[in-house]
Every structure is written in C-alpha cells, then in structure tokens.
Length: 421
Image (cartoon, rainbow, N blue to C red):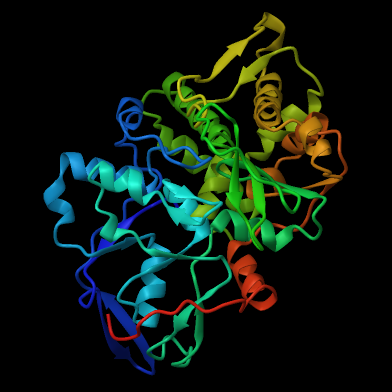
C-alpha cells in the first residue's frame, strides 16, 4: 500500500481474450517500486518539506519515492501521466479510468495527505516542484470506483469495482469482531492494531519518533497501529545463523545449504504435503520444532535480547543487542526463549497494554504464521500483554476487502469518465 508505479493514460494496457477469459496486458507502465525500497536516506527525508499531516513520510512511501526520482532521475517521470499503487493501477484498468482513484487508506500511506480534510497537501507539494498531476483522485474507503469495462476471468462486464483498500485495514477488519478487540499479527513483521473510538482525531503534526501511527480505517474512524519491522524474520535470521555456524564448524565441505536441506528432509517427514515452496521454506527457517521444544523446557531466562535487527521506523538507528550474558544462559533454549520474549516486549514497548486498556480494549486476537506455530512466542506475548487472548482466526486481507464491500458499500460512487485505458 506504500509502493508506487507509473503509467501512461490511454496506453496503460491492452485487452485480449485467453480462451473464455478476458485479460489485460500492461503496456506503457513502469516497474513497481515497493514499500521496501530503501533509496530515501534519513538525510534525504529530512530535506523534504514538512507535510501537513499527522503521518510522517518514510522511505518506500510513494510521495518520497517520487521526490527522489524528481531530484535524481527527472527524465524517468516525463513519459507518465498517472501514478498510484499497483492496486490502483489494476482498478483503473478494470474500470477504464483515465485518471486513477485511490482510497484514503492508500493516500495516507503515500504521505503528504491530510486525513482530516481528505486531500493532498497540494500547496506544499507545488511549491517544492512536485509533479502533482501524477497524484490520483481520492475517495473514501469502501466507495465504488466504477464498473468493469470488460469480462475478466469470469467476472462479467459491468461489475462494480471498489477502490483499492489498505491491506492492513482489511486484515484487521477480517478478524476484529468487536470494537473492544485489538489484533496482534506476528508473521514476517509485527502489527498491533486497535480501532479508535468514534470522534478520535490524531494530532495535526507528524512526529517521526512516535511508535504508534493512526491510519484511516472505515466510516471515518482511525486505526491505532504499532508496526514493528522485526518479527518472524528475526527468528528466520537466527536459524540461518545457526545453520551457517553448523556448516562452519562441521565436517570439511559441509555447506549451509546441505544443513538446511537436512532440516527440510526432516520437515518433509513430519509434513508430507510440503513441496519446498515459500511457505514451507519459511516454516523450516522460522519454526524448527526442536528449537521450540528446547525453549519450552526453559521456562525462564535472565538473558535479554533486543531483537531490532532492522531498526524501527521511529528508531531507525537502534539495532539489535544482547545483554545479561552468563555461562549458564547460553543454551539454545535460553537464547530462543530470550529472542521470543524480546519480540513480544518490543511490540509491547511500542504500544503498551496500559494504553490499550485506556482505549477500551478488552481482548487481544492473536494471528499470523509465526505466532500460530510457536508456543513459546504465544507464552511471551501473553506475559507481555495481561489481557485475554483469542487465537484461531488468522487475518486475511482479501476476505476483509470482500467483507467491506458487502457490509460497508456502496456508500457513494466515484464519478469518473469511462473508456479503454
């Protein structure tokens, strides 16, 4: 939802048939620049004009990327007349929109968007030479962008198409059954989110050092979110390190790949359906059962691990550290327990349980692959957050988006000229 791609209106795609299905092929478009893009350094971001928004701008945000291209590669932007997230591109192509329509979810995630007035910071952007003609029109989340102009994979022509929504907001919507729930999702990274009360307004100015951000949700409410960059990816890095150490210390010629292949063979014995795809690879790297069992046997440890290998958006320079090391706490069980505790305490430090209680939160819904497969991690998050926990309902952004359009829409339709792109 933070990323950006560019296209040329009227020449952005071509429609054709593949058997019984209609398909579109991208034509005059750029490559997608994702939220993981790291070209915008802290010094570059500090040189940008201050947004009139409560949300800060970070590297990988669409507006920051466009600013970088404007300064370092202005020729790149010249052929294009439209920009948006890859979701917005798909919606525009389906509906034949010459000017893309973006939800306030995605606009807020781009930066330089005022969520109160639901408008871009045009004055600030224009004064700094930003190509504002590339900015999409903005609609409320849940609005209908238009109707499909072609049959598409069995979806008939004339079907209403909603504006693209934020994946975080839809993920939360898919499993938050009541407003007093908070959702803790631990997969590759970690998100802890809670719906703010009706009428809540965030501060008018951005604070890059704040660990909690407030994103537009639905029905003009906000979602308070602590989003950590460090979750299951930290566990995966730890296991990769162990495999490398085993290869370095093992018989001559034994590679890390061989060590990991042996681990995969063991996983396949336990899980015959595993074919070596990404999900299986993630499981064998993040959640080896032997590692979890050693940590379950080690119910406590004095070892302390701050797991911020990637820093955090609000503290980019604060990297991981280990303290309180002693000869008695260097076993695999101690280290795994301390690592899981560190992940739980890190997200708790960003959004403490006391703050959740002040917001009226009564229960935490735990979800995500790292949490569902790791009993030690579940134990540690329950220690960190002394609130009732509920598991078993994984977040699903696609299901959430469908529910939004069924339950919240259509509230209004975006008026937009139709035609082939």
